[in-house]
Amino acid sequence: MEYTGAVLTDDVFNKLKDLIYELSGIYFGEQKKYLLETRLAKRLFALNLSNFDDYYNYLKYSSEKSLEIKELLNSVTTNETSFFRDMPQLEVFVDILKQVVQTAGKNASKTIRIWSAACSTGEEPYTVGILIKENIPPSGINFEIIGSDISSQVIASANKGIYGSYTLRNASPEILKKYFVQTDDDSYAIKDEIKKMVSFRNVNLIDAKDVKKLNEFDIVLCRNVIIYFDAESKKKAITNIYESLKKGGYLFLGHSESLHSVTSLFKLVGLGKTPLYKKE
Image (cartoon, rainbow, N blue to C red; front, side, top):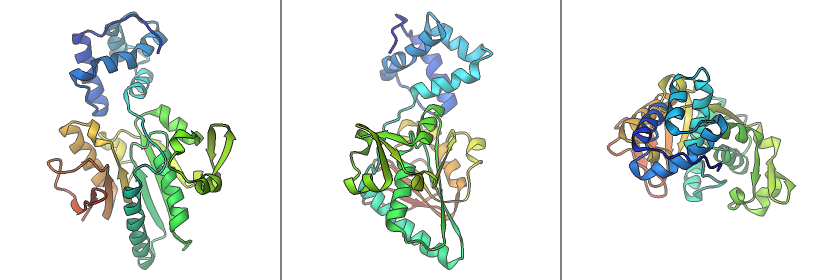
């Protein structure tokens, strides 16, 4: 972090957190004031601004505000992820995927669409591609995997498809050898066989117009995302996801997440290893 010496006052913190909430649905409580200060200090330095009040005004009134809003969202979003994260959940995903494939075959449907929402740097959608290759025999059915995130920065990284060994810590040596090319001591590039299965979009989950660009999904993975939203933003995001799913489509949440008190749109069809919901 570049140190500017600027201090985030309570007044400006409140204005910034309200703006971030309005733009993304992410809520910064009082306990996260220092976190916000440290994350945004580098933006003050980059723009040669002396204080956070000037930065807020820049976001509101500058002719370059749309570009800076992207930088703001890049700075405040949480991007912790890894390949094969929470494998017990992914085992359930594979079971459900096999059911969807079987149904698609009976209905002569040729394409299965899967959305990895808030996918960060792409580990989850690429994991989905690997799981398909490892578990679903070729049958004439096509798979479309979409990864999305509000941060343009992480989407750019996902498109590159290059990862350090730490984010691949759950991948077996066999998987590494089969689906990755080692580029140096600590970097691995995903092979084109998987890369071509996935496309990435810049999408804000709480923006209905944004999400409407994505539709007719058989499965949506939205894991460890809504824990960062307040009640109103959770409802918006989940309603938008509901609209994006086919009838009979499935929604996977993170193991600690639930739609209880959020919405009754979905039917809970699995708990155990993972919260699993279905659009009926």
